[in-house]
Length: 117
Image (cartoon, rainbow, N blue to C red):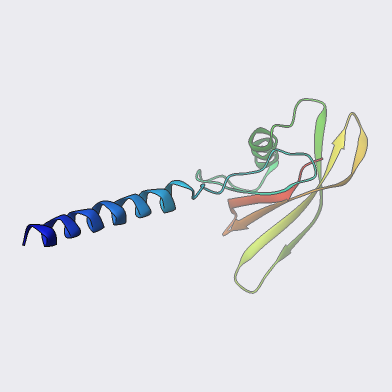
């Protein structure tokens, strides 16, 4: 009888350790700040698409005052989500492959994606 309790206690501890180890290794998804790395930033605040949303992108991905974002095109998909494509310029020079996208639903920004260079 005591042996069964010890076995049950041992298995409970083992299960708790396995659970802890498994979930302690899952890392929340964040935006990447490494150059040349793709990223996605989910926006919690409600911001409409305008020049202020460009400032939001600059803030979220760490661009400075020497960086400019210029709108290239805007498309909408059948789900009602619009995607605005922006070109990154640094000191007036085009950053090759420096494309960022603002994803918005009903005119409100929901996320930002692209690659950092």
